[in-house]
Image (cartoon, rainbow, N blue to C red; front, side):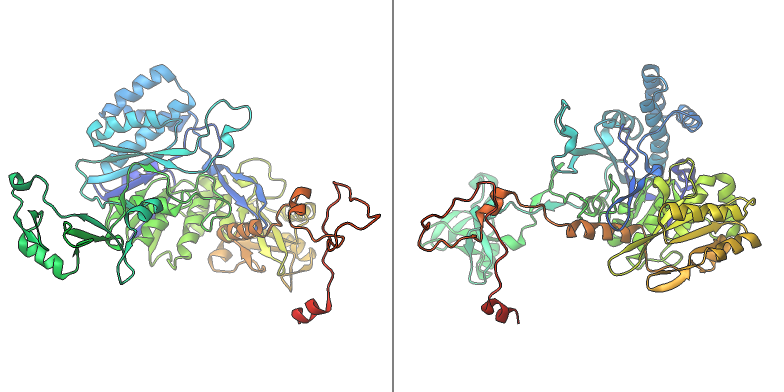
Length: 581
């Protein structure tokens, strides 16, 4: 069954069997100074309090890096020598930490990948050259197949004023195989329209476009091509006489005029297209208006993953994405009938993947299983003991919330997250979320939540607790009263325990915008924005004149100032009123 793992992939990968996966795609955090995060947005398109730090694209040297370094050094792989040499040069820099963490994971991925399997490593220009050295040392230099250059965006602002470099609009995908690739499904691009117009200009009686092609055998008799007569013309042909007669019966051999050399009729609709090369500039670019966009700045288009999966796997094969993030590779694999394994270190990423799968009518338990996410109160307690911050982020997903300031650690001032709901047909309301996992909870925490609601003009508040609330807490919530939200009177503050949420006792809220529906609503908000006001010059290009032009300028008529717009709202006449009716 398909599997989704919550946690560090360096802990989960050793548990996967050797040579069990046919295709690996990984899009690890790039070692760039930019912070590419999962940008949560409210349904009106505004950024929702910054960004989720769990997706930060940088690593620092620390205890986990020391562990990864030890794993690489004890691996017996040539990668140990590469990492050791690089450390002598880079010391314990951020880039060295990144490469060390990647080396430990690439060693595990090599073990897991089947012989004949393929691996695609997605990276950017900041570290691709170092990663290629690592890949060569682990998979072997002969395993390298392609450096794919993908154009990820149109011209944009990294070539902004003051910068002294060309705009960076491409990513690199390193394509390797473990031995000779067993699966290779050739991919094609559509023909250029200019080529079609030039070469497929002929149309037969069925409306099918075609071009004519040479039937003569190259090399003549020396290559063993048969010599005979076709339609009154004798030549060395590339087909046997029997095959040629069959083509004639099918209407595939024609003469453009009597006496000319017969030609083969090649139909456009039978041609697969242009074989795909290693420069991929034809895929759609994601923007805030794209239907599939979730607002994740480094989200990859579904078409990119579909291309990779289609080329290097067959239906029923297993795909692994050890940095599955917002789940594009998982969705593509599911859509194409592949089995899949996804791993991510944040509960919020797992939540996004599950919501994407839910929109494909795929359900946990029947279509896939999740490991590492709490499934009961005991599991929630273990997560809280292990990592209080991850517990908080996970608890927020139980009420369809989004994290405060993207989930970064720090003083929350009574706000751990937000819930966006449809208050009425035009208005998006919000609720403040407060999460407490410890046993020391009391009424002052509820009053802090109410204060945060007042400060942020939030109609509703949701208090999520791992432990049972006290009587005073419940009293403080009741004293907050009720408020109309979504056309219904609802308790202004609602307390829910983790146990209640597991049983399906969710807060009483209007229809909620979760992460994906909020992104969709944000796209609609962008599309509804009023077009920019026209300039005076643009207005003058299509004017409704203040003065009649029939008969020319009248005596004594004053010239209009140049800066005065010439348009006025057209008067309604009896004819236009009848037309409106």
